[in-house]
Every structure is written in structure tokens, then in C-alpha cells.
Length: 117
Image (cartoon, rainbow, N blue to C red):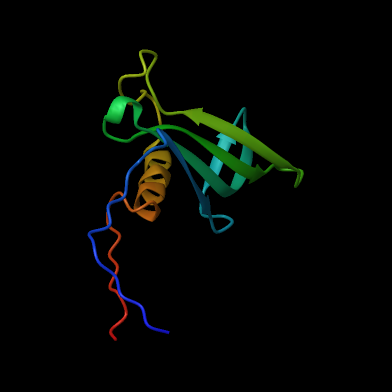
């Protein structure tokens, strides 16, 4: 098969929202709600870029096991009431989860080397 290629590929962001899922190792993140420990195994972070503005993390949905072993979910809103910046009182550990999601989405820290022919 003969194949040739020309041009300069450009990626566009047509979606104003992107969700990034992370499978977390059990026991590495524990959320405590109303005195009950929830052992997180998955996080789904939603990023938005309204009006071609920089990407912002809106919320993160955690899937966890409760004390009785039942699966539970918990959503943490990451924006302030005006939705123009980060909300207050959010644990640094939750922001680390957001940073991991951003990294896996390619926003920061991802490097890729194409295969050597």
C-alpha cells in the first residue's frame, strides 16, 4: 500500500465541557462525610471552557465504598457561588485529584514521543 500525507493537523475544542475519569487505587483517598469514611476508587472531573476561556474544573464526582461496603457517590462543587473562581474550603487533596485529571487530559505535564521509524 502506498500512502502519503500533507498538511498541518490542528485540533479544535468544539465541546465546551470535558469529563476526565480516574481509577484510583483503593485506600489512597478517603473522604469523611458525617463521620463516615468513604474509600474512593474512582473520580470523574468535569472541566469547562465557556466562550473559549481557559479550562476550569467545575466539579468532581467521587465513587466510593462506604463503611458497610456499599457503593456511594459524592459530588464536590469546585466553583464559588458566582462561578467565576475556585470555591473555598475545598481540601488540597481534592485539588490534587483535579490536577491528576488535568494531567491525564493533556493540559499539563503530559509528554509524548512518537515511535522512531
